[in-house]
Length: 358
Image (cartoon, rainbow, N blue to C red):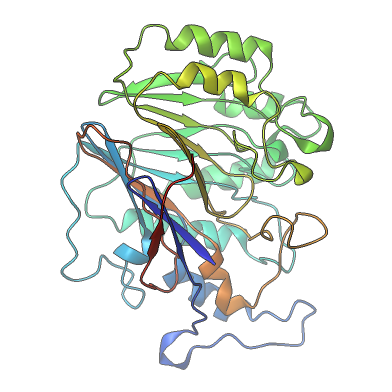
């Protein structure tokens, strides 16, 4: 299923099983993965992945690409008007360049599909956040390929945090050499944009037993100090790879020492925490903190506890686009909590709301 969020509420919508228009249905062939690669790329060309975040004066709002893009033309839907905003940014996650198993035989193609959706926006986003697992095996050629694909994105800057796949073998040295200039420790840092304070955290180095993320004492001390100069009314956006809330600790889907980090954030009136790692959208709201996990541009994973273990989940190729995603946000001045909206990339079922968790 797809999961959507807005105005601090949890919205759950059914996943619609759709085939391609004009009879372009993906068919099986004699290869061992059963996927017609030409049909697969045609499918992903209109499915796309990613989320557009728009910000205006203190409130974030997001749009799934299926809300914005006409799947037949690849352009903004006729008559669709984005609200005014101070600035926008895009989040993508878990590109896993180098992965080529049956769960997705072409991660480069799906990443390109995401970039095409981003480039179709009427106003280019101010920047992009990539929340980790850029590569699958932390190989130089994988990082090279990712860099080459992202060069085509129409955005001023890209900010990164590493995933556990990006720090394999060398404890993140290659990642830091490429993407960590000006950062602290294992790659953490912060910056300000349009009155919003952004914090990139690293929780994939020296991970705990069971695969849980770890921030570590040095980074926690830095975070506490980093926040000292900001008033309680400053909107905060934290982005990391592994979720900072306990999604499913049995699979390592959480961060062991996140509670200390969250204790420093609770005084702020509006905090959004953006993560990847679990390859599906989920929401939790605790007071003024909204946790939002992003889908992958590469492959889906099973829902918590729905399989013996996490890992790439093979689905029919015509459904893959429904299980990948991107995140987009508006920012509008408002006294309430951040507004976040996500929808499945394929299908547009009417959402039903429930009260936010506490």
